[in-house]
Amino acid sequence: MINDWQAEALNTAPDSPNEIHGDQLAQQFGFKGGLVPGVTISAYLIHPAVETWGMAFLEKGKAHVTVRKPLYDGDKFTVRILSSSDSTYQAELVRSDGVTSASAEISIEDDAPAPLTRLGAPIAACEYVGPPASPAAWEKLRQEGCLAFRYPWGSQARMKTYLRNELQMPELLSGTRPYANMGFLLGISNWVLAGNAHMNPWVHLETSSQNYRPVPWGTSVIGEMEVRDYYEKRGHRFVDAEVALYDEADDSCLSSISLRAIYQLRGA
Image (cartoon, rainbow, N blue to C red):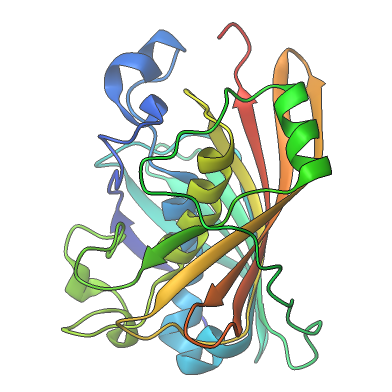
């Protein structure tokens, strides 16, 4: 049975190059403070799946998460289960003020699409900075291909926890040598996107992800990306991308992620 759960939000990226997660720039765009990353919000909505289904979710879990309203550091929230079965649930993340911040559809997929095959894109140097995000930049990346990036899951990994006390995460995701959590894995889709085209500020909106393998401690993860679309709506500029994560040791696909983001906010 999938149960509701409550926690306190943690801004896992207050010093990010994407300054929408810092108070100063976020307030200039009318927000109360720095935004909790969308991938962290996603991890909150996925948390009950890992608690309930354990390794099965890491091996074949599917998640579609849409972020609708901001969540701020220190906000109390409830992940409310709207409906559930033995292998699926729908949920929403509700702030203590009653605002629904995000929604999700989560499932275990026994008949998931075949995992993707690594493209072999060149891996960017650590110091690489992509060109400024623009329609021309996205079109060039779509036509010519994107760079890949390397992200080790280990003691130096970013977003090792999505909670202030990491021991409150499911047992598989905490301890001395945990499996990678979904905040980290979905975070890679953000980092690959921002690595290929420089954006500041920008806002993560939506992901659809499919897991194929758990990611154990010590794995070197390669993130590859393809640009699917870019467009303007109501003054915001959007980009859609497909990101696939691979184990560098054997090129096996770990996860596939469809990502939507506002790469240029109205008025930026």
